[in-house]
Length: 293
Image (cartoon, rainbow, N blue to C red; front, side, top):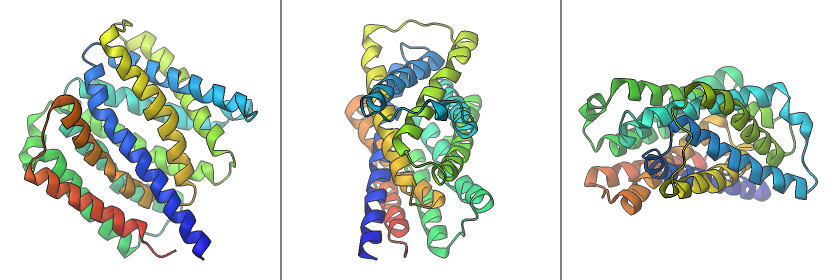
């Protein structure tokens, strides 16, 4: 039992680190999209991340070509690539605030899909965590003003929400895939490579430019190496023993780090309502992560 609890704490820590890294990506992507096409940006990010991860797998002798053409990996890759394309395009038409809210609302969708696809029970503790976490995300993303959601571009908001719906399916389907595959690192690598492959035709069809000015290069490097190669491995490693619904609540840490990086990179300081929302998100994470085994 002590060993199991230690493993659970480690898995929660891994998910928290992945969420923190992905939270930092909102501000970085927003900066990158000022000079790089949104679809091409996604292709560059996953191509770089996939190359780094593939080299690591080859160096360790763990590269498994079989996974690249397996049905679960293809499904996950298509869903993931589509979600990132929608998110990036949406971010060019709406605010990062609205995008953060509408993407993170998917925690409720994860709970429903997990109950249907994985037969996960929705416990009272999980419901409390969902409710408190969603309340925190709403407060952070709207600065306490719910009407602010309606003031962004409706199309950009719709694209961001659609990305969140796709990622809800991604989380649950990835959880199911990890139950049947042993090598978490290679699964992560296969999904990133597959996402890059699917983004190639999307870029050819939809991208308006393939230019990468020097000023935007660092954003591609950061999101490719840190937010993709590192974060995907952390997330999948943590997801193995954590319920899909609980992992979605834990990842509500994303908006908190989104605010922190907005301060560092965009000089956007949080208000009292943002700090209050962050406290609610931390409370929800604590509730879920202390769930009895």
